[in-house]
Every structure is written in C-alpha cells, then in structure tokens.
Image (cartoon, rainbow, N blue to C red; front, side):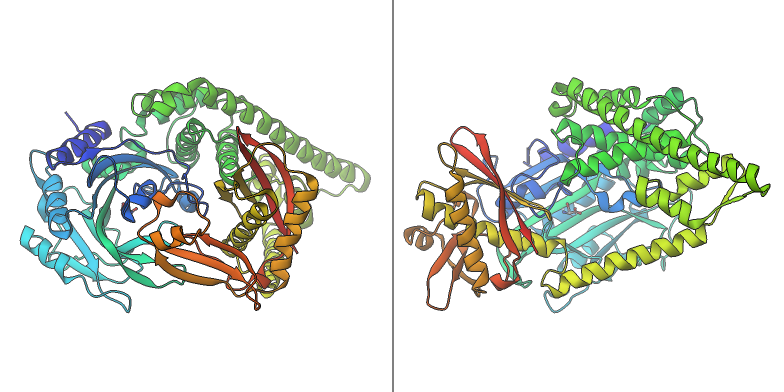
Length: 604
Ligand code: SER
C-alpha cells in the first residue's frame, strides 16, 4: 500500500526513538516569549531557551512534529509547494551530537529500506560556501561523501544558512537535502542543485547552530553546538507519493473532496486555484482557532481574519452564495483531532468562531454587491438620459470601490465581466501605484523621524517598556516585576505584578518618567556580564532561569549618570532614546490575580 503522511510522521518519530531521542509535543502556533514574530515558523522556535543552554527536562536529544505557520508565502499558496500552515518534522541535539551523526542519520532515514527507502541516486545536497562570518563547511561535504553522496553544491548564506527565527538568537550554516522530482528519470552527473532549480525539491534541512546573532548584528560563536533539523511533512509526503502537488496527496485529497461536495464544483483547471486556496486557508484557520486565536484587526487575529475572508471570497468566485466553510472545517478537524489535543478539545469553539466570522464577512460581501448594483443602476439611468451605452467602468469608479469599500479589483473585473462590461484596469493600476507611492513616501518620512520599519517600531516600544517598568517600580514599589510582555508595531502590552488598580496619578507619573528619559536622548548602554554578578547587583529581570550564564544588561542613564533603567534583556534596543516617539499609556486593567496589564503606544 502507498505510504501516507501519518505513516511518515510515525516512522520519523520511531526512527529517532531508536537513536535515543525523546519525543516532545508540538507547541502552540503562537510563540510564547518572542514578541518579534507572530507565529512559530519552525520546530526550533519553541526550543530557543534550550538551544541557548537551558537544560531540557527530557534530555539532549529531542524530536517532534510542530505546527508551523508562514504567511510570507500567502500569495504563492495555489502553486505546487507553498502552504500557509504546515507540519515540520524535526530532530534536535542540544549540545550533544553534531554534524557526523546528524548527516548519517538523515541519510539512513531517507534511504534505508527499513525507513523511507528513497533511491540514493536521486539525492543531492547543498552545503555552506563561506563568508566573512563563517568558514566553508567542508566538514559536512566530507561527511556526505562518506555516505556515498557525491552530488554536492556549495551555496552562499542566502541559501545555506538558517536563522535566527526572530531578530536575534541561535543560527548557523545548514546542509539541505534535495530530491529529484522526476519519477522515471535519473539526474545526470552535471545536474547539481543550483539556485531555484525546478528539477530538485528541498526535503530536509539540517542546521548546525554554532552561532548566536546578537542585537548588534554580529555572529558570535555559541557556547553550545546544536543541531536543528526540519522536514516539511506535506512536502516529503508529496515527494514519496509522486503526486503533482501536495494538494493531491492524502494531506489534502479528502479536504478537496469535501470542498467539491459542499460547493458543487469539480477540481479542474478552472477551479484549481480557488479550491487550493480554500483548502489551505481552512487548515490554517482551524489550527489558529484551535490555539485560541480569534479574528480581529490586529496581530495574529488579523491574519486569521484575512485567511477566512479570502477563503469565503474564493468560494464566491466559484459561484457559491451560501455559507460553506463549516463542513470543510469539520473535515480538517477530523484529520487533526487525533494528532493535536488542542483541536480535539476545542472543536466546538473552532466551529462557532469560524461561523461567526464567515457570516459577518458574507454580509460585507453582500454590501459590496449592493454597491456594485448601485453603480450599474447609475449606468442605466445615464443610458436612459443620454442614449449612450457605457461599456467600461472607469478607473476612478473602480478605485472608489477599492478605496472606500475595500472592493478588490479582481472582484470588480469579475462582476463587470458578468454584465458584459470592461474595466479600465490600466487606469486603476496607475492610480493604485500612485497610492502606493504615497504610502511609501510616508514610510520614508517615518524613516527620517528615526523609525524605518515595523521592526524598528517594535524595538522602540521595547525600549519604552524597559523605561516604563523602571517607572512603575519607582512609583509603585520594588514588588513590581515583569509578568509578560507582548509588542506589535502598533502598541506594547505589558503585564506586571501588583495587587489592585494603579491610580491615574501614578500612571501619569510613569508616563512623564518615560518621556523625560526619551527627551534626554540617552545613549543606551549594553554590557555582557556573568548572570550571578547581575543578580548580585540587583539588576531587574524576570525569568532568570531562561537566560544563559552570560547575560546582557541594558542601562539607560543620562550624562549625569542618573540611572533611569537597568534591566536584563535578550532583545535589541534603540541606540538612543531620542528616536522613541512620545510615550502614552492607554489602558491599565486587571490581567489575572495579582497581575495588572498596561497597554501603551508611541505617538508622533
Ligand atoms: N529551522 C530550520 C528550518 O526551518 C530547520 O528546522 O528549516
């Protein structure tokens, strides 16, 4: 019988058990302690503290499958390989084995008849070429040759380096394993893996995490040498089953069958793109909902909202005018509930939240259609008055639909086509470009004010968070410590220990304290120091146990050496506080028992 995705999942875990790995559960799709990323994009992300040297309770050899979300690929979703949600099979060495074992085991798992049994002639690998930060990885190349793999390409950092997952953290050169995509043919001696060579498909990535990228963008040799590997379950399934894409493999086949049934459509050249988008987005939405994300206008919730809306719109394109998502989501739940506890226990909540969003968006869609009808009515009246037939929707009308009602241009074109009308899309595109240029000019202006992009705003908010904590400790007392922090490009959200509501008066004092430090344009000082020394010096910090032996201490002190804040931290900060905009506390509320929550923003 043909192998399927769950057989592969099972074999992977079994194989690594024979190599003394402990199997750990998948973490949530939302990272726990990393405000710089919205989602876990790789299996290593929840393991960062252990990759930095913390002791993992299950030992130094770990393996699992991890739910991952990568929305950078969202526009490619309907092609043969990209998905917004995928499962990553991974194995890790936390300062235990290194390149030799990692390469030998990957090769054994892929080619041995006891495991996946891939034909070795169809395997090629890439290794890190070299650059100013790290030497050529000849060691990995030699280890591959020792396994009998001779098809080896040396590629630069953009191809053969992985991480860090956020802005700083563990990373290193990697060796990637590729599989020849043609079932009946074999690669010739000169068909090596180049950049974007469509004859080869990357199936597994072994990262040798020897470096730590610092907040200063340098690469320091890590105290502990780790291995981090990742293999996309959907891709390897497709590869081993020779289906044209992941969508025809068992990962998607029954979801697609459910879509065909529910929407009364057939999966063919005309419907493929829409059906694939609905299938992919339904999976991702289900997994986000199962981990507690709800549709909203910010952060993870916004991405979820966009995915659901896009799926609904694709359904509309396929001619559906009824709510259709529920049976498809049930199918996804059915496939995942035995694999992920979060899906099993939250089934009903998933469905309820989804149905609510679908209903809401359907009425938006209806409003769009009404607007379109109004436009058509205007054309009719104009014809009756002037006798002139309008056969094109002008760019300004199309742009108004877009700008005022959020009407995507493809939608205008589709509706127009149904009525036998054309749309001045060239004019629309020009207007759209101008609109974008204006936004870009605005972004450049923002750069002149000292903040280049979202990551810099996050950094500024992060430095403001340090100052705010110091202010809270100054005016409320030393019992105040950080209990949690979450920063997006829009705002900071900070939880801290304190019983009871904080007076408005104190909040104002804290705000003034932060703004005073900002107005002094303080040069932020960073020092590495032994953890014990920092603790002994009463440096403020929470979660001490998560940090390595040497810690980073950030000090905000003015020229007279008035110390505003001195705190332990692993994330980057602004160089000077003058680049932070005006600090404003928006809300103070209860978070949980003995923990308060502040939301604050930066204003120009
Ligand atoms: N972190 C690496 C990747 O995502 C290996 O797991 O490819």
